[in-house]
Length: 443
Ligand code: FHN
Image (tube, rainbow, N blue to C red; front, side, top):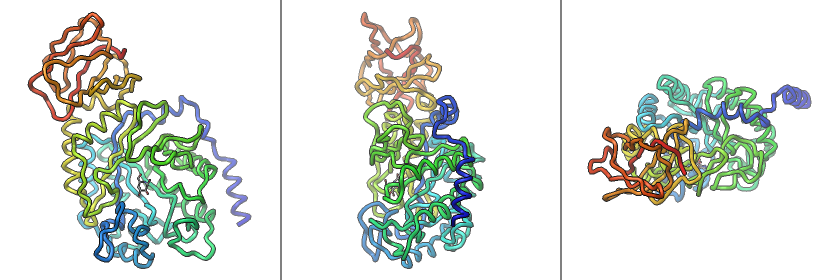
């Protein structure tokens, strides 16, 4: 152990310190992520087998927490792993559904709190190759399908682990009942080696950590892990749950210089714009993992309006699906993603690679600005009768105003104060929200 710690310290000294990266380097590294704006979150694993039910009863709460919520002993929970055999899993189909929805990256749970790994891990036997009958490397198949489709593959990874003995969290999560759990050993001989495997085998673009709230985890460990991973892959993007900076579900950092590259609001959207990068993650119903009794689906309209609101506030939207134990994305999710894709086909110019502006909204209108600063996109989220009046745009004199998806310029008058009175067209090219492309700048 002393030799090991000596080696680790030598290695730590040789590591480059990425926590003090220049803004220029950071901007270059984050640009693809900022431009992407819209991604798919996938919560999948053994918890899809019970699908929210235990001993014939529906268990309250999110499906992926059933082991803890129903206090299922490890040997019994491992029975779900022995039943995990998603023969209808088709990585290309999943990637197609995400891409056609307009999503640019996919974040899948490589390992959730239950400790079950969805790849061929040499560090753990509690993985899809050794512990389940499926014996296919799910992350390999998805990474290959993503590469082929030009979609960025990213991994969610839980620091909290309810299965690995040394990871036992004494305060609340004592599933392992391990005699002398050694969290430092879990970190150095399980967590880091598994992350090294993921980075070297599948080259993920983002590592999305979670479960950092356990008392055994500290900001200092988060900073060390951040540097360890960036030294393995310098252009890696890592969320702020690698450390302890996150302020609960609001998701933004409590203090300056917290480890991590972006804030992670959960099931909520920031009140306004932010100077720091952020990404709102959200379920389409009320559960991350598949729960067969949860039919409380948000409408496609709500989901599109969320995407517009988040883009206008300069954030990213990570929208979740919870596939079944057979390996299928629920039809209700597929239908809503298809509608989002139809909308994005016409309006994506106002979403991808745009900047936010201080006055990001007026009434039912949200604004984004083209990166070159030449165009303002006014995205109207409520149908208009007669004329729409906009006060927050300085129109370039003599230029036309277009609705994305329509060819003919719209009729408009500018009044003395420069406000635009725009005649609302009868035929609309899409549903739920409509984008006016205006040559000019925000006021
Ligand atoms: O406990 C997890 C939960 O299962 C889910 O993964 C979400 C997704 O962001 N995060 C945690 C709750 O904050």
